[in-house]
Image: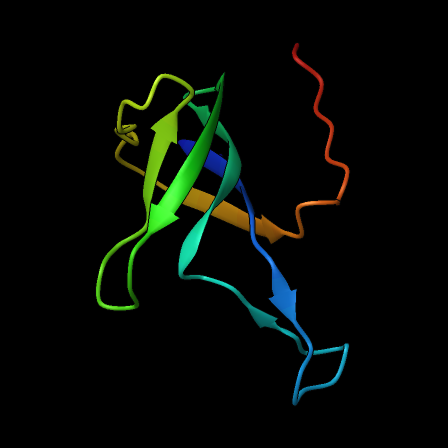
Length: 87
């Protein structure tokens, strides 16, 4: 199992590439759905440059601390639908 699961919303650019292999916009900011230890947190991400790490924040602006262990990050376009069920 994963300790952390993140749905990171990123823009994709198909200029100069095929639709099968678009470039993800990994610098900038966007919304994120974050699950830490099974708990859901609505938030967003910011990455100021390729030399800096991506930082995830909750909806109050506090930086999130991920749990030790495996992390899965799914990068989806902003318009994509994503749903989950709580058990």
